[in-house]
Amino acid sequence: MRTVIARDGDVPSILGRDERPTPLTGGPDVVSAIADSARAALAAAKAAVRDVAAAGCAAPGPLDHMRGLVHDAPNIPGFRDFPLADRLRDALGVAVFVDRDTAMAAVAEAVAGAAKGARDFVYVTISTGLGGAIVSHGRMLRGATNTAGEIGHWPVGLEGPRCGCGSYGCAESFAAGRNLAEAFGVDDAARVYAAAASGDARAERLVARAERALENLAIGLTNVLNPSLIVVGGSIAEHEPARTLEPMRRGIAERAFKVPRDAVRVVPAALGRDVGMLGAAIAARERSSGRGEWFL
Amino acid sequence: MRTVIARDGDVPSILGRDERPTPLTGGPDVVSAIADSARAALAAAKAAVRDVAAAGCAAPGPLDHMRGLVHDAPNIPGFRDFPLADRLRDALGVAVFVDRDTAMAAVAEAVAGAAKGARDFVYVTISTGLGGAIVSHGRMLRGATNTAGEIGHWPVGLEGPRCGCGSYGCAESFAAGRNLAEAFGVDDAARVYAAAASGDARAERLVARAERALENLAIGLTNVLNPSLIVVGGSIAEHEPARTLEPMRRGIAERAFKVPRDAVRVVPAALGRDVGMLGAAIAARERSSGRGEWFL
Image: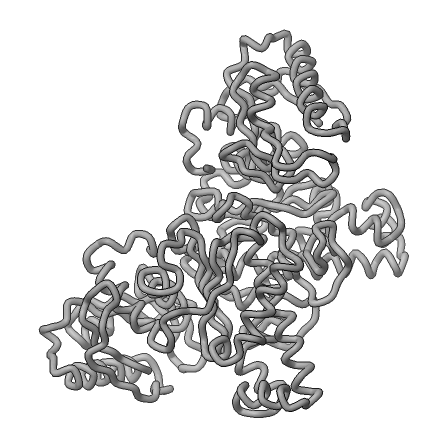
């Protein structure tokens, strides 16, 4: 987990930070660790809790951002329908606003990054997993129970490898870092891309299949949502644009409907590794002041 | 093409109708034929143009419903960026509101059919083609240039048959009536389902593959949009629910995320063959009175 202390502004500026492992021993330990991390980041920024107006927390989904409830965190036993926002507020003594990490990233890119001014865009992250968030008509698309936006889990193959979500054929199962690394039998997707680049045929097949899955994802987003931008972030997109953003652009150019194809651009995310933290800071500011309507 | 004359009401009641072939000889001939059809339907209803408050026109996409412009109608030469609403208004002497047939159907199901009261739902039609419309947060999802909702063209296979849209692997390419019939070498998808039911192995393989494509579509809609309802209409869905709605339900039950899976129901459309006509009548009433904001 990472914590930052940010001074408000159009783009919040980071004054202090802390990073530590996430405990895997249940909700209360996670809450304590976040609180400790926040205090360490405050100390690094030479600030105190009383200086903090509000806190934002980006968490993996599925969660209910309105109630601050994390439905499920598969990697942390006991983290089921856990009231993370309330527990963090009790631990920190400030109001806390929780949202999905990808929604926080989309907020940041919309306010201060690559999606500035866009009313219809999709944020995609290609990293350990593959996720995103959808902004439609100037609002975050939330759905009936606030879990919309799991774009990595639209199945893009009739067959395909088993996915961490329990399904198979999801875009994530073909193209996310964890899945590529597991399929190749290594611990880091960077090694799969490196092997493919040096001519390893098995690695090349896996990467080419990931490209086809990303093509399908980009075409589907374009035809179904007609966005003006697809903003692509995450460590794999950042390091391998020729094998992520490029196939997405190629798929759209060759196979999407003309009108939405002409309307959309696939662009890299602008805010880098801190995007979720910046989004959390912006969300805390907007929601605590009652101005966050567009992403609620 | 079909025309109906409807008396206004919560559910418009149909007073007269006309049906005739769509001319394939360009926009002006289509406009004349629609106007003739409207006059015949008026005569059948013992009414005159002066009795008509407004007209709605459901057309195949892609089109711009705000400008009443049909971008492309592949089956009609010369129908490209054609100002259908303006030309029809000139021919009929009443205000005309154009929208995509699937958007009109969604409007009807929302106001008077299976989606009454739902704020987040997807309308799906499985017929000659496979299309739909998305309602999110109580609004029709339109996208940046008003073409959103082409859910039949999210690719659900990494390989797959060529699709009418120029791509391949689209849900439509596996599961729409025209595509099933062509793949089996007959002129009507009903014959493919009949052959499958009587044990023909090739037909069964095609229908089973269509089921898997519909599973992927339903799972994708559930995970990405988190709707409370997926309303499924169209002639194939109506005649073959066990091989369309059932696999969609099964796919969601077995492979979608828990929270959106628990939130969604897959239900048959309620309004039958006239759904687009009823939607056009409702849209004409709402848009002419300035109350159509939710679907604009």
